[in-house]
Length: 38
Picture 1 (spheres, helix red, strand yellow):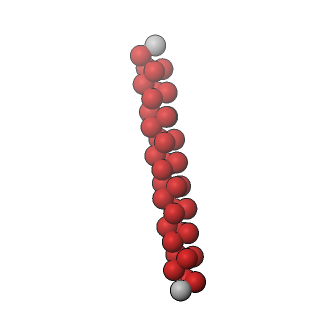
Picture 2: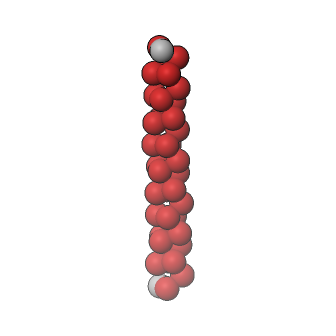
Picture 3: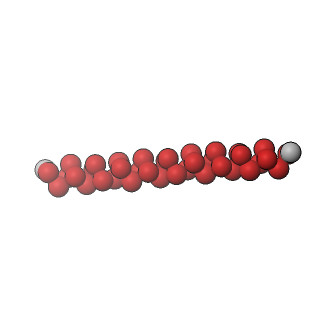
C-alpha cells in the first residue's frame, strides 16, 4: 500500500512540474511575441 501511495505521489509531482514548465513556456512565448511588435 505504501508503494502505491509513493508511486501516485511521484506521478503527481512529475505532472505538476510539467504543467509549470508548460505555463512558463507559454508566458515566455507571449513575451517574445509582444516584444516583436515593438
